[in-house]
Length: 129
Length: 129
Image (cartoon, rainbow over all chains, first blue to last red):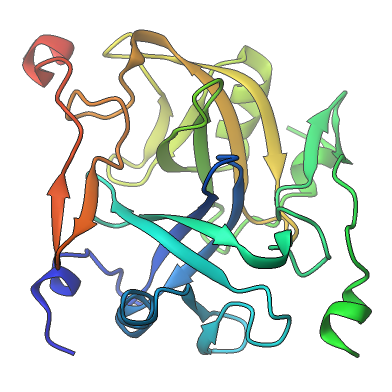
């Protein structure tokens, strides 16, 4: 894919940039994931968030298994052009593979990390495993 | 520094994790930067955001030159324990070295990146250079 706007992104040596995904309306940060050129291209083309899964080493259409896709409202690039911020509508209200709204469910409190957010749906019911 | 809560963070091979910094109240994502153990320790100890500057390869007390320090309200850790989310009060209302409120001042619009946020203060006046 040849696009000036894709070339403008300062991809790291491994071809990736971090992506902060924020929920439209609530402003809640849901996830931080990674995109390569192809993932960003697909995201723009389809209007749904696509990432590069570093663990599975493949393009990942968020929600492809769970149905919890992210409908993209806006895409922003930072001053160093090496981080993306996308604003999404989170279908199903669950962004985290643990069945929680946000991946940032642990809060530092009194010298330890405390899980403060409830599991909304059992992951076994989300992924059918 | 020996602390269980520091060991709990899944530091990458280079000793760093990405940190999303979000403004309390507005919910605006201001910056994405990096912390190592020392930076997170100092952040908790002082209540002001400290990062690891990858370009200068040193501990960086955000605002040390500009006065635009970030007063930390909360610290969160994600499901994979390898990304931090901190909520701050941004002193001076300027987080970006370009003199803007947020580093994410470029929006994807009509096939290009468009700077949508104003420069609030000339960086030469911020840094006295």
